[in-house]
Length: 447
Image (cartoon, rainbow, N blue to C red):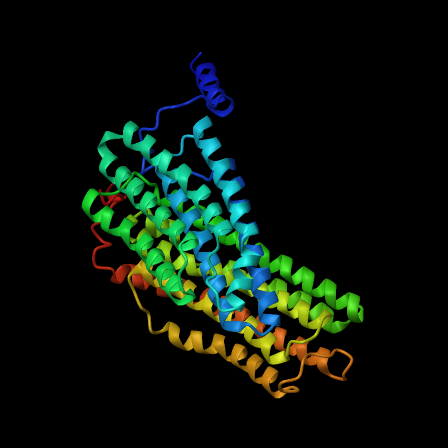
C-alpha cells in the first residue's frame, strides 16, 4: 500500500498544478535537476541571444563596430540579467504550480517583445543615439514584473526569509521605474547611456548589499550550477547554427569543396571545444561545498553568454562576407578570434572564482592557445589588406579556410591542455584552499 500511495502522491505532483505552498526549497537537496518548465523558459532566451548575435553581425558588416558592440553588450546584459534573476528565484521557491507556470509564460512573452526591439536598438546606436528604446523597456518590464509578484508571494509564504524576499521586491520595482524613465524622458544620448550603465551596475550591486544585510534565500547551489550549465550549452547551439548558415551560404556561392568542409568542421570544432572546456570546470562539485562563491561565479556567466553568442556572430559575419561582400578577411578574423579568446579567458576566470585561485601555471597554456588566434589575425591582415573578401579571386577561399582553421586550432589546444593538466591543477588549487579541509557536506550553506 505504501508503494501505491507514493505513486499517487507523485502522480498528483506531476499532473495537478493547483496553487501550492511556497515555503522555500531545501538548499541542501542533492541531485536536484532542471524542470521541463525551466528548459522551456531557456529556449526563449536563446532566441534573444541569437537575434542579438545576428544584429551584431549585420552592423559589423556595415562598419559600425563600436556602436554595434555597445548595443550588443546592452542587449545581452538585459537578457542575461533577467534570466539570472528568475533562475535564482526558481531555485529557491520553484514549486511548479499554476501561478509559477503562468508567471514564467508571461516572462517568456516579455523576452519576445524585447527581442522585437533589438533591431531598433542597434539601428539607433549606429546613428549615435541611445540603444535603449521603449519596446525593449516594455519587454524588459514584462520580464521583471512577474518576478515582483513571485517575490511577494515568497515573502508571505516563507517568514524566515521574508526580509530577503522583500528586498528583491524593492530592488526590482525601483529598477523598472528607472528603466522606464530612461526610455520616455528626453535626454541627450550620452546622458542616457550613462544612466543605463548606472542602472545596470545598481541592479547587480543591490542584491549583494541586500544579501549581506538580510541573508540568503534558500537557493540550491547544485541546481544553479546545472541551470547555468544548460543555458551555456544551449547558447553554444547558436555557434552550431551559425556554422550551418555560413557553410550553406558558401556552398550556394561556390559549391562544395575541401575548403567548405574545413570551414564546417572548424565551426563545429569551435562549438565542441567551448563545450568541452566549460564542463572541465567543476562548478557543481565546488558550489555544493562553497555556495557563497556563487555570486562572483554567476556574474562571470553574464559575460560568458555574450562571448559565446558572439562567436556565432563572427560566423554569421563570415556568411555575409561570402554572400554579399563588403567585409575584409581581417574583419572576419577579428570577429572570430576576439570572442573565442574572451570565452577562453572567462572560463579560466570562472575556474579561478570557484577555487579562489589564480594559477599562473595556466599562463603558458593560455599563451599557446592564443598563438593560433593571433596567427589567424596576422593572416587576415596580410591577405589583401583593406579589400573585401572575393571568392572569385585565386586563393581567397583557401585563405579564409586557413583563418577559420587557425581559430579552431586554438580552441583544440585549450581542450588538450586542460585534459593534460586540468585535473592536477584543480586538485592542487582545492587542497590549497585552507578552508576546504574542515568542510563537510552538511556545512554546505552559508546561512
